[in-house]
Picture: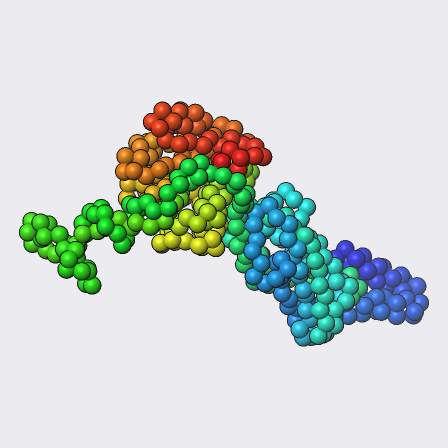
Length: 397
């Protein structure tokens, strides 16, 4: 695309030509032709100014660095001239999705004076990771006005980079739900190897004939096996409410759901440091939760991706799946219908901790948690109300 300089230069050459035509001075024709020739040469030379560019991007000090919300990381961007004539006067705009939308770190302006074939130039900048999630860097916007500034060439430089940012974790010093339980051998309400019968299920190949429940066989005419409780170190189930509640619309990252994810990550971290096996149940129609006992990385990778877009409320999630001896229920929205589901868990012998976000205290001013939290406390459920503030981890302990 021609720049204002090209139009000015071309107009000047025309004016000089007209003067030459009126005065019949020969050297004016020569000057006019030279000026137009420079504009034409600039157009030809600028055609390949952005061709043959490539590059790579590294986030953090290593290729497999773990990234957590709130941390500062260094991003290295390398631009290579793979082939073709040298590129010069190249401006590049890097849009970093890891930074806050209103942060100056969101867009970085880079300038390359000259880059010959086989050469590379590196840029480094520091970014504060704004929030959890899976991010893909967009293409770089590249522009060059080489060699004379007469023509502007625009292009896209694609350097595929995907990165996963884990939710913020604040190490808890204590957690009453787990700390007050001193016994290591507790029967967990899930199928396993033990002696306490917790129910029956259809016979599976490989089941011991000694475990066949003959009364059920006589009643149904099909083979039925006993199912035993797993008597081992108790486990903790993290229950996540992914239902699409009517949250207030906001661009802020400080929302009840985001804080519920942080709370789940911190509680899971504490449980694993204490040696408890950890399980997750949620709405599998949003993102399937990891099956069985989960490790630290599996939990964080799951929590980094979840969003409140589910169609099944917490009552259906809790009622449809088996929990461990302990359950920490994340309630980003004060849904009064979930109170009954939590009470049923307690009646089944599960120790329940309800972590309720007080939406009214957040910047977008959502629903108050007072009524739901009060009803749970009155029923004997352990409750932690989390209000907006710096010490959210201290409110969970």
